[in-house]
Image: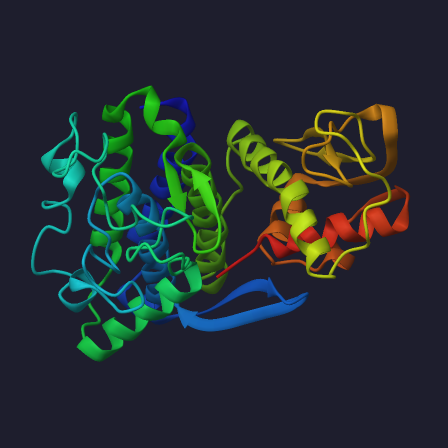
Length: 345
């Protein structure tokens, strides 16, 4: 198993251990999923079973990217409708027919590349099955489609087995795929992550939703191991400059103060993260292409590592998260609100 798949493998195993310990009735314990949307806290009520369905549906984005069957929208179907796995989740092995399984080391059935065309092979985002420039469904749309299909089917059987099978198969598939697979694009609707980061993002989501479940059933649950937590924080920090630029284009953040050439030093915020998995990072403020560093530091934010992750997950407001602040107030506000905006259902 490649080291970059370790956090996902660990977090799915920890959640599976939790699920083994709870009783059948606790699968219906109420859980409220939380995230930030349009600058304010948002939530969605569900139960433990719904949380696992959510993880199964969104992990399906990664599964589809490596050629496994997508549990929500198999190839050839409308991506906004539930697919065959959702209609009949227990009737067959959902991974027996994927193009990667049929052509694990060669090209796809049409010679399109090492992983085949897959369900999201066309379009500018790599996730438009019609090739018409539309982004495919993101995590929220996929989750709602999957929940709706399960509700219509009336099948309330435990989703633990298909979710765990998908997680095992993902880890096994990326372990056999070789080094070149790390940059394979994984679509998240309007944006794309390379496979290496996408699997880390899914580990992050698995931990936070496992914590949601643990809180609902009064089960003790610890944060990830320090090295894994550090990787999760690093991913979030790497996403901040581009997300900040997007918020600025939408009028949700203050304007850039200076024009900076790509690779040149620009205004930066220093992020000091304390506790296990901590460290310090510099966030570029005026351009994602600028070089962030101490030369032009204008602000400092210090906070605990778990608190930072809860902010990124939309479980804390920006006002609740920061333990220490110093310097440019607008820059601090923009970075904290941008961190919260990274959250999604």
